[in-house]
Length: 487
Image 1 (tube, rainbow, N blue to C red):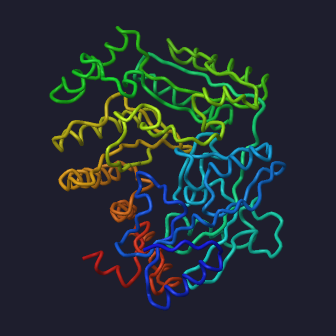
Image 2: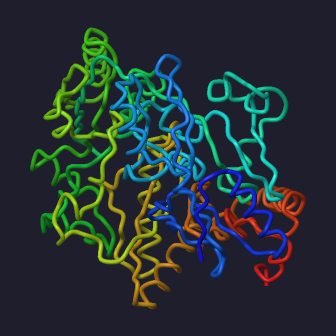
Image 3: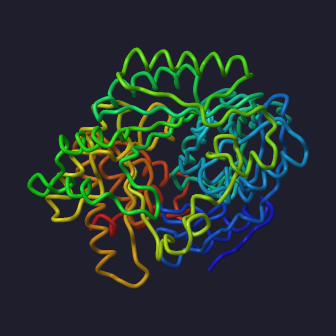
């Protein structure tokens, strides 16, 4: 069952009715949280509150660079509004563009531009929330009636409580402000290649400096040893993935890359600014890498003044780096139906240090784990980090699931839960999870006898004594369900 309110007053009334009859409700923005449960509640039978009809773009200001949105607004909606009104700002976004900035930020989503914008919750500023008793609260500057800086100053006065409403079940967010990035005058995409696996170590150190200094935007790490979508891996290379007692022979893989003149790592580097500053930064980047890594090469593959023409937008390699929403992440829309996922996928997304040595260690530990489980490893010695996170890496694995085959799903759950424990043992925590795995993930954040979880449970019991809002979300269960979940 689902309800779709259009106004905040309707959300308040729904919450009051749910309290009266002790009905569990599960709010979603657009329900596009793919890989992490989509619109599924933690419990069967919970009433979904679909906020897609609350789709007002309340304000976009391209002089002070912010917007205020309702949860039903999608990235497509906001982009089209800015383009139609010739506004000089752009919104950082994830893949794909049909999701909600409000919903994505509340689940700690990430994107593709400068670090301060890629952190979507970090880039939010101010919110309006319907509390579990139906009251309406505004946070930070929004708590000041008539505030003129709702979406500009994060803190206002007093406790900063916004974080309590992300990945939790303490309220229903009905409005959020966001900082937006001014459109640059010029955009360049450079490509860095290096020949050796261990080159990753100095490469990451330099890239961290460039990124944290705002010289570059989102660096996309890849390995040319991975075949392009739809193509098979070279048989010789593939044989080396299991040629050392069932595990990869790293030396033979490196030798293969050098013999065939295939770079081991390839990094796409977006650079923003005016034309002169971008050109100067490209030259500086070339100097840094050429001095530090033998065989490092940099090539500029895109170099554009903004605004882009229609043809340039269409051919742009990474549209999201310039805030252009799309659906190209789906294989079905870009690579043909033969490469479309047949059922679905589940993301395992641990956060690891932004350090080359740690990444190589992470590869080896995951390879060992798959080997111990008697499975073909989904990780190779040239698996790359995901770099959406600002100041950390995400070493993601996508597990397939099935609509019909229970054995596949059971195996996937066992592997996922094993991976959660292995990652936690080495200090790597999953940052996001689908409903079925949220208890396992939250369970390893257990410093001091799980004080963080106990604190969240105490808050839940205080502000939502009937436990009506999204019971179980984020691993936070109300008292009436807590006992049976611990049994």
